[in-house]
Image (cartoon, rainbow, N blue to C red):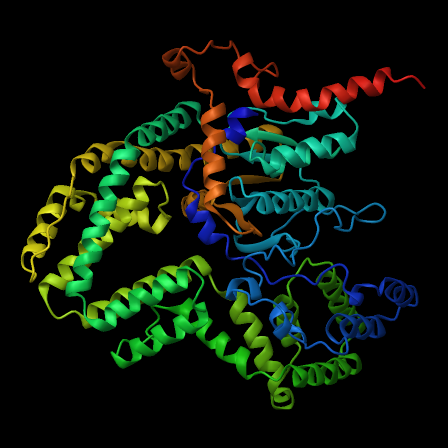
Length: 636
């Protein structure tokens, strides 16, 4: 168990970007629109699906005093609320002030009929996250849940997604990075009553010492197994590289900051004013002081002035974003409601009962948060005949609006914006010195992220393909040369030595992480075959997602990517994760055990954990056991 939650690799910034791709927010459970259960039940008993659909949709979308849009941005009292970021307004990052209470989440009433999982019936409760993409091939089905290490909200949502898959599809196998054996905690369920287990698990989850699957394991009676899929030798190599990076980080961080300062001073001297203004705006956007949508529109306008068209197919996500943002400001949501009502009334008169029943079931899935409004409206659009489009023009635009936002790949969007920004800057450069400085600035930035273990998959690919060009000594010479040409001349105290010394450890960390991709996929398929299950969940950081997708497709294995909702990601999350990792790491492989003087164990897959590997397990048990003993010995 310690191997699992103390050894997740540190390349989690990619997940933090990818995890923005979550679905639109579900309506709060306290919303009066959800208090229609009795009406719905009576309508069902009366076999009145047409009436039921209208009752539900009116309840869901048509509450007096509220606009139609299923986003908090369009609530009638929006102006009185604190300003939110674009991603908070559209449910991409959970706003802690409006997030649903985990404890208050409704539990299913009565038994749930489990159905065999297929990619067609795979649903992710929108209160917990979203289905990002899927690839249909042969069995088994692997559901990759992207992990935000040590982020409390994300781990609670991950737990909720697992619970849904257990209840509705009989999930029984959860595969995890950072472990190499059975890491289940279900044996602790006998240590104390449920409430005590919940209290202790909550404490450890907030401290980053357990993860979402561990939390569910401790606080439920569901029969599922948590199993690690690491290759021990590779995992230990990755950890060794991590500790080596830590050793060289202090001096290397000081050195990279010197290069950053030199780059900043030269930009002020050499860059054209429009480029300096653009970079200042990017800093403001990153700090949250400038709206993202406004910045993207201004960048697009600037590209247009420079004759850098967006319609060439290079920026599909940015184009969708800008179109959706424009529609958001143009749509009359009250008119959408009127047209929707008229359209539903026409459907009740024309649809066969079987199709209407299907639409009813999908509306109920919407109510339960199993599909998004965009998905439901896309289904409605399928019933809108071409000759009817002119009758419902605003509804059609609203459906387009929802579909655009749902279809945006937000990690790719950030990459596209970064690329367009680079092209805009390049268009303003007129001298070789400006272009040389821009190249060095990019490489210094990537080196900084490499040193801090914050590379995204795209950034790592750039580094891997240009590794031979990352020469701090040359950067120092070039920056000094540019400095001497200024009036007055600029001098810089640059020390490339620590960066040269750090490169092997930094490179090794990411190179071994890439080797782990293949090992985890192979081990996942072995465990699925061993446990004889038709599907399993695989939990790993988003840095691994592109490689997982490619490897599963190559093997013609059905695959889906799920992103839990994530709370505000802070430096404290990373610091907490690093601290827990260092405090509790114990080698998995025998060679590394011997190397570090850790006693070996005859069978690493036995249920008996060696003493050194029980640090956190015993810590949890020590919290739970006293109360369990007290409960057993209490006088009646």
